[in-house]
Image (tube, rainbow, N blue to C red; front, top):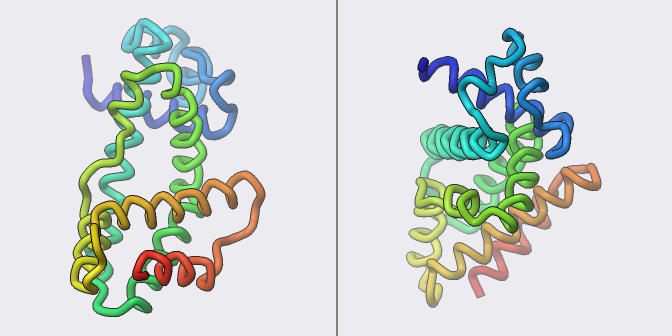
Length: 185
């Protein structure tokens, strides 16, 4: 079985989930989105759960690659304002283009993982350059328990992304600044 075909199907499944929601995620819909003959998706992923697991694995891989790319573009922050600028850029990416579609799919998968612990294991936040950068910055600022503060800060940022996906609009620099200020207290 071709890895490239599996990747193509997982990418198509992410798009279907983003556009049609969890109820719209079917083998046939993925076949159509991938422009492949009917039955192709079910030949590679026999069950809906297998398809969903492949989708989540691909989603996490794409998210991790995006975080590495963003981290490579931005130097490690030395000041709170530099951290704010980095987080504003990150949020902007998550709310636009293909990343926006992945964000929609990610939140649908997060809700689904409440009923499927095997998905939760895949979706658990990973160690990555962004998380390490924030933790290192907070530690350098003398924040007590920088790892837990990082989790809290990034969870709040994630909540803002979720809110704007659902309600529209963008995240302001002031909102991010407020979260960074609170993390530094």
